[in-house]
Length: 143
Image 1: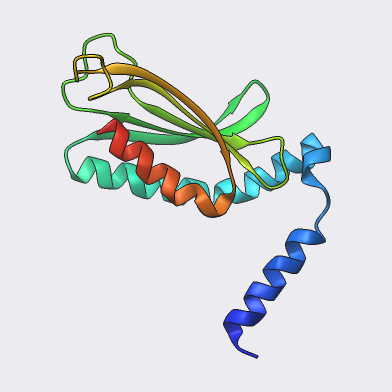
Image 2: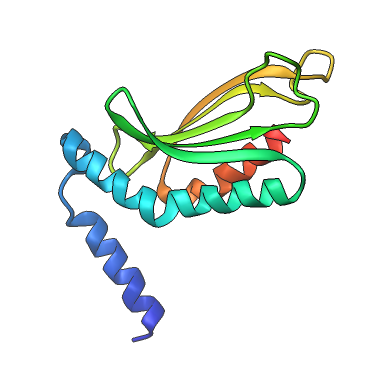
């Protein structure tokens, strides 16, 4: 038996034999807090640093929103119109089993009717394994 097989098998079994997170909001928040510390915030921090290194203002933080923990990434694209809300990605625990809620809000370049800036709102639920793809898609849309 290979190490990869063993980790895969343990992951599958852990997924099916963990408490039903979706039925207990406190468990869901505890699960999200752990995931935020281990995976989400390091990913968002790296993304913000990379954006800054490429001349794009960016920041990330962990915040509480209406009693729920959420991770946030904000990217301020070049030439954002005065008074426009910058693109914001918010990640929080979703209602489903081990799933995340992803929100894109703000003013994005190339989203307007004439190809200029335009407002966008997108909501999705994903599995943690899809997180990196969603962050990359958000950065592409925001820049």
